[in-house]
Image 1 (cartoon, helix red, strand yellow):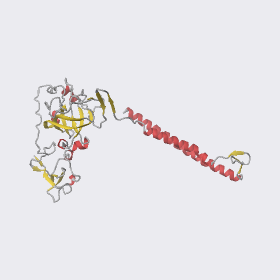
Image 2 (cartoon, one colour):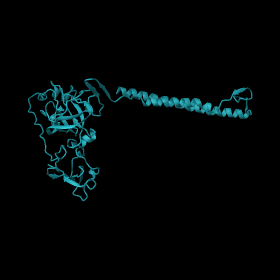
Image 3 (cartoon, helix red, strand yellow):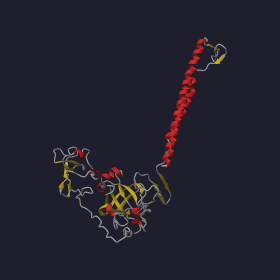
Image 4 (cartoon, one colour):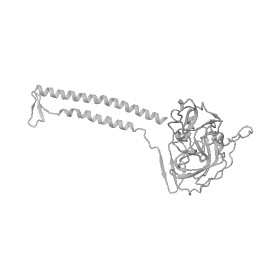
Length: 366
């Protein structure tokens, strides 16, 4: 906030300076016009008698230097250049670099800007491994709830999967985890949903837990007494990521959370997650079970292709989890999937999905 106030004060001061320089410029220009007019009037009234080299003219009483009319405008032009130069300087006030990359022989330290509201701006950049062994193709996983705070915010889709792609972004989060965004190789679109496309630039969020000390109060107990030593791949590295495939119900996107291995390399074994302290013992809530949706995108309402009831009034957040056609809100039928994979709400009407390859199948609510 202090930087914004300083910037605002500088901008206001600059605008006042420009205003007064504009007045000065107008005065110089007006003076130039008056000077030119006076010289022309005097030259005409005196007969404009010039010296042989035309450097002086007789004003009736003495010889006066014959100044070219354009010379009267030079001061105004100089002032204009000064005003333009100041404007350029003000436009660059507050500009700063957005990312810093430092390299050494053993590790790369990355600072990545982020619009993520849960990113921790005070955290040190994460250290990344200079290299990882080639993937052995084997998934190495553990307890999908170990050291995950509030596990009920994650809908478990599969307890252990392995995906492949290139590291696109690395962010340090306030809960002590990292967001290692991976751009998946072709053919793995089922691990993404519409929210990954719109909010994470098409990347899959892979989240190793407790890499850093959490500053988020409700996440502190989950990492108490544990520090994840999992080697973190560097930016632009091609990796195989193994972990639990989940739907983050708070944000709406798909994740590998927690990550257990990159290219089959794991960190220190995770101890079972300790329950948050409470005044009296309370039974732990059961973890949500994986749901079979028969190929439908993961979603909080368990909409499925398996069968059930046709959906005439989908939840308002439907298009955050499903790829919808542009006219979806105007549909007056039930929800169907088109051949191109997008969803329409014109089921039961003639010509449904006519611009998207035709009708493919219905979507149901349980």
